[in-house]
Amino acid sequence: MKTTYLLFFLIILNFQLETIAQGTLSGIISDYTDGKGLIISHDIVTGKKYTWGTIDEKGVITIPLSATYLDDIKKMAAKAQKKAPRGFTLRLSTVENTFTCRYPDVEFENPDCVVSGLANLMLTDNKKKAENGRIYAVNNPLVANWLHQDQKGDVGLGYYLLFYFSEEKASAKGTCITAAYTSLGDENYDKFTLFDLEIEKGWNIVQYKIEEVFESKNGGVFPEVIKVSKLDNLPDDLTWVRAK
Image (tube, rainbow, N blue to C red; front, top):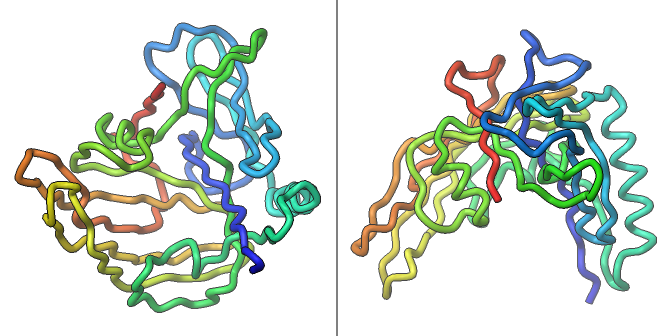
């Protein structure tokens, strides 16, 4: 059986631009003391490392924002396809398979539009190349820790930002409802993902805001309502969190 493998890169960034445009993205990680380093990702098929930017001694991250980003990603995908396991086919993510869930009630405009971003971003020491954790753009450290644990463990109210490059204009609007389990016997609840997205051609800031949480009988806290929307500007309460 032929298996389709989704090549899907995510970016989590903070940048000092009044509008979304090509340029250099920058942000500051507080309490950073590990010296100069690189911002990298690993190809999830080949394991190859890619360098996307740098971090200095003060924790300032710098990442170029390229107007030819999708062309670069397509070239990377073509190279990865040559080394992919037999039976796997690499393809870029689209609006439809990015902003959806298992049982969607979402309406799309231009659903086959290609969208992409950077991979999960990691910090490395510039000399030894030792990994020094991943970085997340959030307004609540609990959200960063939850993301770092592959969306497991407790979470709180708040948001995280992802940054996408879209090949064309597109939209996703509607509600996904899925059954979620707390791992405590048969305890479950309905999880709602509310999409209200108008994607522009080029770079887009997308906010995932946890508006309500579900508290289980054993005290665990899970996301119950998440609103997904595009932002024109960065929120004033945005912070950078590094998780190891």
